[in-house]
Length: 387
Image (cartoon, rainbow, N blue to C red; front, top):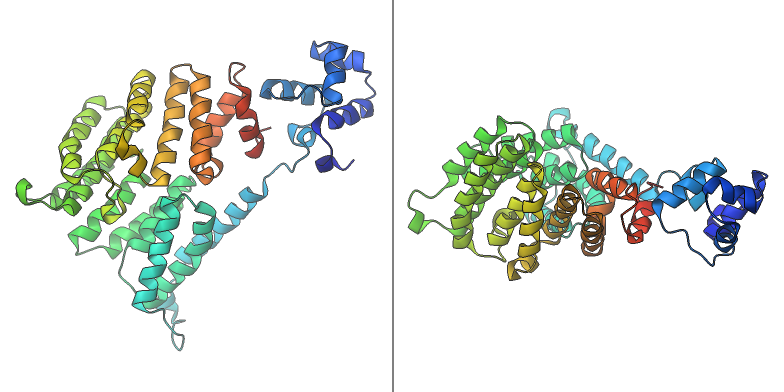
């Protein structure tokens, strides 16, 4: 059978006949009518619900991948794994120690800066497959040029956090911190990514606070938007670490502290690749509420912030990540329809945010198992290889 060329109804018919089941016996095992089976096999009635697809596959004694006529592992997953392996190899190479840079042209400072700009743009636009392609070469050039600039490691850590590559993300963030040594501004920027990596480590909160107060203006009235953006972003990371570790009072207090800083910066800014501003702080409150298991609070704040003008000015990556958090919040309130709506919106805004993050697979899988979930989630579950 050429599975990919067949509509699902004809595939059901082929597999049913191969199992030597009549339409009636097949219908009986599913608890459906013979008419229902006939309409499915002729393509008159679509198979839309995840639960029904799984039941049909179980009766036919095939996995859902065969029933749906696709490979068990999506091609993009294999490509991502290969790309991560290349990033790991690049992070593990020390050209200055091995002496391999001798006699080879080193990328100029201007070209390297442009390449870093392209990498950050790819990240903020949530073009993760493109960034996976760019980073191995970029990291190699940084090593060859002996550049003590944390930006390549920062964007690498940010991407690897998205891909749930924790240990490798920690290595990249540690490299960023080392490269920033001696420069309080660069150190603060690198620490933002360190906070993302160490979200589950309670002790990391003190690191965020220490770096935040180093970069905070001595005289608030003379502080620059750049300083407030770094300080506020670090406090947001500290708040999210507090939330992840169950300290709601500390999380609320830190987020309250960032509110005034965000007002000084305003929305639509992206100082030091932070995207910090009032909308970013409010999105942080949604994430904190989800981490604390407070679904109603997360949903209420989400539905408010997406109406702000500042929401539209957040980087694409930030907006999509927020929608994923909102979906988790809706699930906490027992609202699979709201969760599906948020995920589908995130998929429209930034498909890679949904299709390349392991955390999203967990949310979609939970939705796919919920009989109350709308059928609109089925195509997304199929594309993620969950059926």
